[in-house]
Length: 146
Image (cartoon, rainbow, N blue to C red; front, top):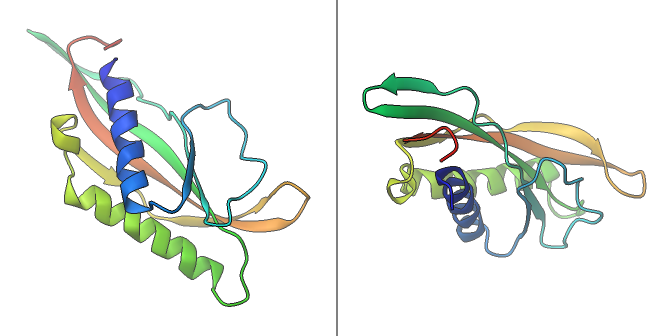
């Protein structure tokens, strides 16, 4: 398994551990949003973009800042403010990342961007608030394909 895929799998594991009751889907840019939101909330993780690497030539080393998009979707509830719930979910993921910012040695560092809450249309045509942010995983490999 390539280093990139190992990092993506580790990111998914961190999110699953931070939010064990949520449905975690994704890791493909071609995947549409889920056709339904789980009653326990749905987290969508995408492959993202490793970007152009910085390169050291001797020995060859490729340094990536891989941007991994994450979408948080929650169902409306009369008892819970959706913005607050999205913020809590994002905070749990942030705490999971902060507890191991090196992904057990897979990354030189991992960080997150700020949470953005946007309106989105969910199946059925209803408007829904969705939280979006990116996880930035910085890592190095000996091959641009590794």
